[in-house]
Image 1 (spheres, rainbow, N blue to C red):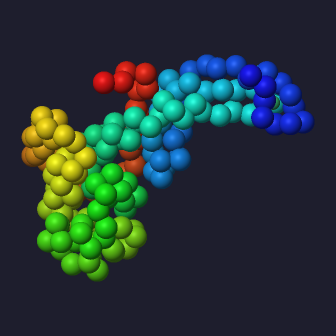
Image 2 (image 1 turned 90 degrees about the vertical axis):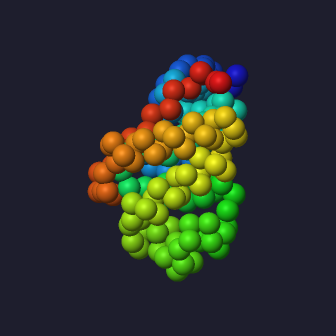
Length: 165
Ligand SMILES: [Zn+2]
């Protein structure tokens, strides 16, 4: 394959590399071992995205089990995966629309109870049975044992590619 950079005309080769997956809307997701096309002549690099579509479920799984307060962009990612509007999310979380919008726009941090609610809702809406039930149990276990009410520390999420279930 030829480099899409018309002034270059170099040859593209495929290899596996880690890809900082900003395209998913989060700043902390690294896809490991993604097929990446890179040009032998210029700096052109492009990930082969057909293989990354499955990663959304893997990212959701990691977010649901992240042992610290969910950040606004992470909550928004789950909201999109749950296919819920702000008003529907507020109804299901039993919190006001104003509060939900404050969380989604980085204006205030989720309290642990609301954080737990978002995740249980996510387990239910993003996954099918029997995985949904297993995810709920895992979320509850994580809240009992590891969860820290902190939104300050950033934690990278690594998704291994090529092990499609
Ligand atoms: Zn090139």
